[in-house]
Structures are given as structure tokens and as C-alpha cells.
Image 1 (cartoon, rainbow, N blue to C red):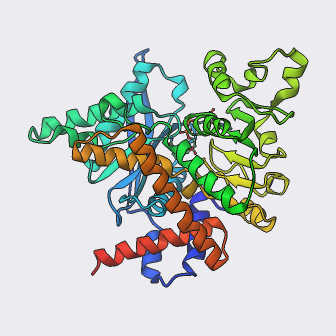
Image 2: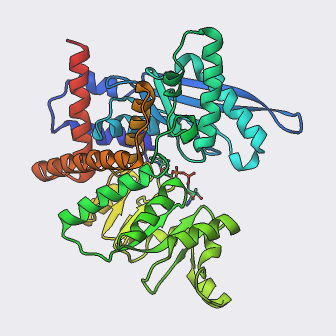
Image 3: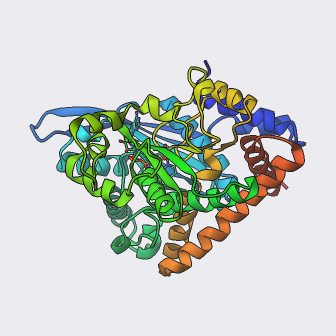
Length: 431
Ligand code: NAD
């Protein structure tokens, strides 16, 4: 089996057959421009020293500064970060924001760290990356296990480093070194829910095109930033979210009525586990509760209209793609479907809305945040939402049109759109 990076390069090559792109350009696009590997000397609370490995892959800068999140996870490795940075390059071109692609990560389970240790680790990472990042160079953001608090620490450290070197720099612009910050620290209204909201706008367009009528049942894997916001929006807008999960397992409402996401959110906060939230808002006994519990593997194979992987990569593969019963796979996680899994779903006529389109709302509002910082502006939430809706609808329509014109699946359609735009930028830079 190919790793996600190699698979994506193959898919890009497949898409390039529909365009007239020189081999040199394809060859440049198949390698990152720069890979940064760091070893962070983290002093633990017990005074022991732990060396922690981190990466930043600056994949491509033809369309603008490198842009992409920072992931803290015990399974982070160079291949994963390379794949994630390549997807960012494609995504930023699909949703047409003026950024290239990048991604970073630290190989650590942040749940094993105290708050002080997590803050120290983030500061060390920012210190190490300072010479290679900046508002017009490389702009990180949140990803799995990172959030506004962590990005605030990151930006604060970066500002300290830059100000000690140069006292004339403009303060507001420095904030644009990263997005997904808290509002008080220069973040944008709507950034936290942006990925879920962007996904919701795309899904609404898709069901119109497919002529599907609500209520539609949905299973969402992953209940973090992305999964929880999307699930709440779907629940408020006529969908029935019948299955949910986190890393420890999930719950399934066989009646088809769906969960009240606000109640599940509160329950997850109180009890820590989605699997403990089946009975929330109802009276049910232990036997019923047991019946409602499912594994993450079961969730993927449920008979629902829409399956939303919103956790990690490679969960739909050649091992389970023929067992998927959903009518649509809507990729809110990055890279949840392997190349082999994708082919099986395509062969079975199940449309897969690719990550580079479905979850591009996050980076779109990151662009809005960056723009506001660079221009000293602060937009109201409604303005952010309106602009996001327009961007997501445009991106969806562009991908859909290529899918219809060229008779290709939606992922190939998105890759064709991205390649076309990347090639245009390359030509402008090399006139
Ligand atoms: P998060 O850390 O907020 O949440 C991740 C969720 O996935 C948690 O509920 C966790 O319990 C669950 N999870 C972890 N391992 C799992 C497993 N093995 N099986 C099932 N669930 C598991 O992360 P997030 O920001 O919501 O990111 C989720 C996905 O969306 C990632 O693929 C990320 O790259 C992608 N994404 C995030 C953003 C963003 O703005 N945060 C933007 C675009 C794409």
C-alpha cells in the first residue's frame, strides 16, 4: 500500500492528464520546497529533559506564503506532515486563497503534558521556527490537538523573538504570522467554527445538485473542532445526526431521530467520552445504553445517507470500502480515504467529496484573519459568514463543473482545478 503522500502524487498525475502541464512543473509539484526538522528540549515539570521531534514542511509558495496547521499527535511523522502540506497546497488553490501549502507537527501526545509543559513546548517550537516563518513567508494555524490558546502562545513567542531583533516592526502585522488565534489576540470572528460551517455550505450545494431531500441521516466520526461544529450545524438545519464518535468510541441512534448535539457537547465536556452520552436527554437503562455504543469501525459502515470522517487519515481503505453503506462520503478530515478505498467507492458509484474542498472553510477564514491583521481591520461575524459562503459556493461550483465536463470524480475535478491555478502562478513567476 502506498503512503498518503505517494498516493496523492499519483492522483495529481492522473489529474494532470486532463491539462497541458509541462513535466518540469509536475516534477516540481511532487516535492516539497523545504523540510524543517527540529528537536525540542522540553523541560518536564519533574525537571527531566525530554527531546521532542517536530516538523514544518514548506511545500509550495507559488501562490503565496506557505500556509497550513500545526498538529500535536503521537503519530506525527515526516510522511504524514508531507502529505498534509501537499493537501494544503491543493486546497489553497481549490478555494482560491493567495497562499501556498505548508504543514507542521510535533510528535507528542499532548494529553500526557501539563499546561505548563504544553506552553513551553509550543514556545520552543515557535523559537525554533522563527527564522523560517512570518506573515509573508509561512503562516501556521490550528489542526488536531491545537487550538486558539496554543496559537496565542505561539504568536506571542514569535513576536518576542522578532521585536528583540527589530524594534521597528508593525505590531498588528506580526499577528498575521499565524491564524486561528483568540479574538482578543487578533483572531477572526467565526474562525473557530469556520471549517464546519464551510463544510455545511458545500454539503447544501451538493444535495441540491444531487436532488436529495431532507431529512438526511448523517454519521460523524470525530467530535473535535471540525466534527462538533459541523454536527451542530447539521442538527440545526434539518439533518439527523444519528452517529457520533471520538477516539474512544461512539454512539448510534437506530431510531433515526438523531442526537441533540448541544446536549452531547455538554455531556462530552462533563464525562469526557462520547460513548457515555447515548442516553443524554432521555431516560434509558444500562442495557439500552450498551446497545447504543459502537466502535469507530462500526460507525463507518452504518446505513446512513452521509458519512463524515472528521478525525484522522486512512480510515476508509480497501479493507472496508466495500462495506460502506452511505450514499455520500463527505471528507471533513484530511486524507480519510486511501487511494485503494477511493477507487472502490468510485466503482460503487458513491460520491466522495474530497477534503481539499469539503474542509477548506478553515483556511478560507484563516485567510480572512490574515487579511484583517495585515490591514488593521476587524470584520463582524455576519460579514465573515457571508464571505465564507460565497467562497465555498464558488469552490464547489468550479469543482462540480469540471466533474461534469470531464466526467471525472470530484477529487479529480478538484485536483484539475488546483493544478490549473498552480500552473498559472508558475507561468507568472517565470515570465
Ligand atoms: P481536534 O483535535 O479538535 O479533534 C479530533 C477529534 O478526532 C477528536 O474528537 C478525537 O477524539 C477524534 N479522534 C482522534 N483519533 C481518533 C480515532 N482514531 N478515531 C476516531 N476519532 C478520533 O481536531 P480537528 O481540528 O477537529 O481536526 C479533525 C480533522 O479535520 C483532521 O484531519 C484535521 O487535519 C482536519 N481539519 C481541521 C481543520 C481545522 O480548522 N481545525 C481544518 C481543515 C481540516
